Length: 195
Ligand code: PRP
Image (cartoon, rainbow, N blue to C red; front, side):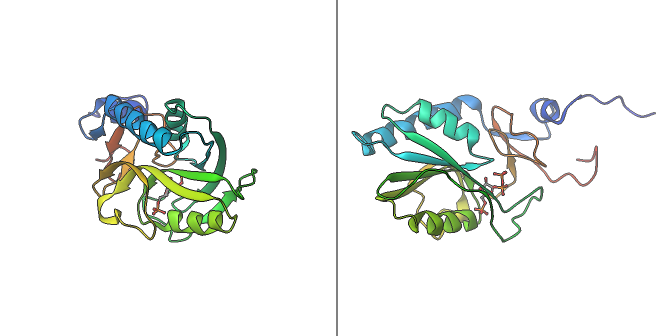
């Protein structure tokens, strides 16, 4: 006899079943973001940097980060894609939405949710530099351990994490699970209902 399905959504399944490891609880993320915002507020005291979020993954991190700042800031967004719905990078970055603001002479902070291979950061670094900002820094909530030193320094790092597939707090699995409050390690699902 088939067992009744215990969870009505993938989100509930991740939150409630022991199969997915909670890597970073909500409170730990919040505490670390407060520290990062404090550091950025000190570094940019008296200035008004432009924060450029990299959609889609960074939207929650960016929203929480800027609300903890004690300085003025502006916000804009790039949308790029290198993963699509896959669990591994395609190796190519596609620009899907460009920023609207002018960056020449501005202090710019590009905000990523995760740096994995470093490909996206390299692409964005080149693109923003060509716009001749006064200064350019990168912030990422997560950086995978073995890419802790990608092609470009990440100036503000939330957490260095193992090289595993993570979801939640903006990070997706097949576009879902961005709305988890914590960050979880997720195993590859081979077929519906498999572990
Ligand atoms: C993810 C993430 C980063 C990038 C990091 O984006 O948001 O932008 O991959 O990987 P890399 O260091 O190997 O380049 P993704 O393409 O999954 O799009 P999404 O943000 O819409 O989920």
